[in-house]
Length: 577
Image 1: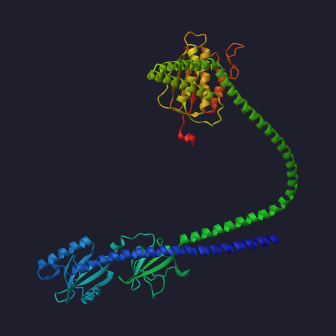
Image 2 (image 1 turned 30 degrees about the vertical axis):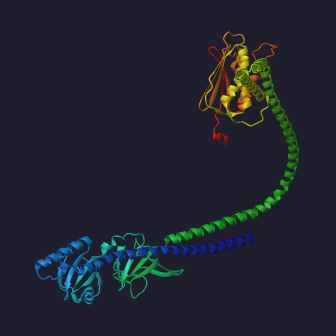
Image 3 (image 1 turned 90 degrees about the horizontal axis):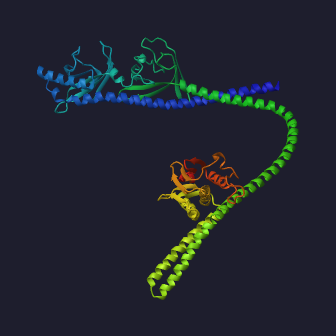
């Protein structure tokens, strides 16, 4: 029972809150509509005043036209009527008339039924020397017209007559008729004389009361109320007028009218209703969630006890499993570290193996410059003894060249033999290939092998490590020399090509590859058993080094030997970033 009263009280509170939100939202929306209504009303009033002012200024400007003076003869009258007709056609005026002091029409742009305008309010005002204006309805056509009368003055400043301009109100309405809001202008008699809703024309306001009455004084539905300082009308005056409207007025003393506007408040009511419904929905959803949470709290409290016991048991199991997992991770880390060290040792062993194969040629490359240096030194001493300093200088220059050559060979050997620990980066592939050629040049010369290698003039940068790439190409050149031991024609060809990926091919004239699919497997070799030339790890090491740089290496047979192709990615700034 208590739970039911709580629910009823909550629903009542939600209803009160929704009503308050609706009222506040409706007032705010009506306030915004009021600002828009005032702007629309001022804009429509400015349009009407500006358009009517055109005819007012036309009457003033044409009042003293030379053609209108001294209209005594029929010829003068025809000339005046021609001028008035031309001006009326250009300004869309209904008619233009020139009157004498007695109100007789002396000249007019269009024919008129009556020849005298005596007693016309606008004319009577013009006789007093001021601008006169009046509105009315033409008897025959029923058109609504607005009339301006400007006095004409003689040489001594006396009034001699008046120029009357008649404007059709319907033509003025065409520029703003059909706008969204209902706008109408009420004259001093309380009659709707101008409107963008033709249904309201000639409706009138009785006794200064709010609202309007139709011309036949038939009773219509109407009610007026105030919301937040704004006047609201409730009416049923046709399908082109809102059912509930915000009413605003604006006095226009210049033309003797009051501008009024009716703005539909249905959007404000819908917005306020949407806001109230949103608040109610949020409150109801929150209440429902709160109710469900309260109901579930008891159930969860009961389940919590069972869950805690299960969690404690599971925690003990996870603690045991976690300890075992940590031991396994530590063992795997130790094994990974040992594997990395073994791989590094294997790479270094490959380097030393290549150095062992090249040792005889390198010794010859170093011994030959040493012997030449000794000979040039003896020659230089002899030339110095004889006083031939120029020839002695030539020998010293030869000694310097030989020393530079030996330094370059030793530098390449030291770089090749060291363990490279720097990360991969930008390296010059042309320099790497030239270094590999220089390291194996002695062996190729000793074994009578020729080299076909035309290095590019400019550097070619790739992604990799300098020492490790040198080792790859040294291994490939040494393997090519090993394969051509029993061949009469021994030639190593190195070619560099490619754009998206750079390709370096090392080709020999040996017997080819017996099993291309297994050539990169560890310990796979085609050399004789017991040979000291290697254990079949060179290509496997090269394969791992190239793969570590994101490249690829493959072997294939050609028409006269074997070919190994190394593909590497070109170095770009985006890759470095």
